Amino acid sequence: MNRFALAISAAIARVTESAHGPYQTAVIRIGFTATWLLFLLREFPHRHEMYGPAGPWDFDLAQQLIGTNGSFTALIWSSSGFWFESVYVFAVLTSVLLLLGWRTRTMSVLFMVGVLSLQNRSIFMGDGGDNVLHLMCVYLVFTRCGRVWSLDERRARRQNAARARGERIAPDRVGPVLWGVSGFALVAATTAGRLDGDLTVPVILWIMWPAMAVWWIVGRRARTAQPRILLDVIGNIVHNGALLVIMAEACLIYATAGWYKIQGTRWQDGTAVYYPLHLDYFSPWPALADLLSSSGTMVMLITYGTVLVQVAFPFTLFNRRVKNVLLTAMITEHAVIAVVLGLPFFSLAMIAADAVFLPTTFLRRLGGWTAHARGRLSRLVRRGEDRTELPGPRTPENPEHAHVGFTA
Image (tube, rainbow, N blue to C red):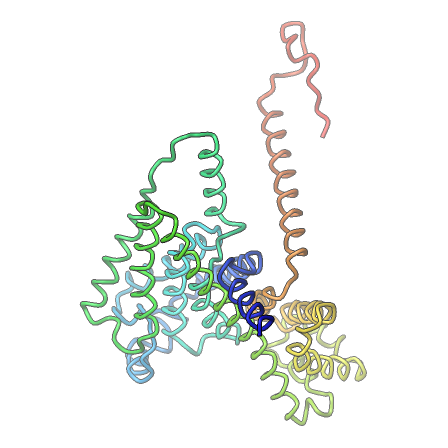
C-alpha cells in the first residue's frame, strides 16, 4: 500500500512540478509557425483566389458552409477587400512573432485565430498538412512553448541577471497594452454576435483572456509565493496535458493512415507508390519520378516500408532506440515526399509533428550548433564592417593602423 501511494505521489509530482518537453514544444512552435508563414508568403500572389473575394469559393458559398458547420473564421465578418487584406497580414504578422517567441502566450492565441480564419474560409484549399496545422494550432495555445529558444526566454534571462545585480526592473507596459487591445476586440466581436456558432474558439478566447490577467496580477501583486506556485502548477498541468494530446494525435495520424493503407489492394500488392509518381499534379520532377519507379523492387520496398513504419511507430514509443530509428525513417520519408511529390508544406507540417518525439539531448545539441553558427556569422559580419570602416593602406600619416591584420 505504501509503495502504491509513493508511486501515485511521484506521478502527481511529475505532472505538476515542471513543464515537460520544453525543447520539443519549442520545436513544434517553430516548425508549425514556419510552415504556415512560408505557405502564406508563397501564396501571397494568389491569396485572393484561394481565400479572398476572387476565389471560386465565393463569400456567399462560404456563408452557407459556415452556417451549416458553425466553424470559426473572421473572414466571414465582412466581404470587403480591405478586411481580407487585414486578416491576411494579421496571420503573417502573428506567425512571425510566434516564430520568434515574442509574447508567446498571446501570440499563440492570435496565431490560432489567423490559421482558423483562413483555413475555414476555404476548406478545400489544402494538401493534408493543413489538417495537422488546424489541430496543432489549437493545442499550441495550451503549451508553454516559449520557455526556450524564444525572445521571451531571453528577456526573462536578462531580467533575472539584472535582479541578481540589484538593478531595478522597468515595469512591463507591452503586456497590459496587448491584453487591453485583444480584450476590446474580443468584447466587441462577442457583442456583435460574430462568435456565434461553434463554441470551441470563443470558449478558448474567453478562458485565456482573464487567465492572462490573473497571471499578470498575481505575478506582480501577490505578497506571498503561494499564489504564484499555484498558478505555476496549473500551468504545468495544462502544458503537460496538451503535450500528451499532441503526442497522441501524432500517433493517431500514423496509426490510422497505416491501417487504412493495409486495407487497400494497391498497398497489399506493393504497387501503390507507383501511381502518384505518374500523376502530373504530383510530379514536379518527372525524371526523378521515372527513376524511382523504374525498379519494381524499389517501388515494392517503399510501399511496404511506408505501411510498416506508420503502423509500427506508435508501438515503438516504449523502446527509445527503435523509436529513434523509425522517427529518422519517417522524417526522411517526408523530406522525400516534399521533393519528389511536390508537397513541401504537408511534409513540413508532418516533420513538425514528428519533432515532439525527438530526444532532448539531440535538440540541445542542435540548439548549440545553431547558436555556434549564429555567433560565427555575427563575428564574420562584424569583421566585414570593421574592414569597410578602416582607412586606406598604411602610410606614415596613419601609423595607428600599422599592425591591423585582415586574417579571417
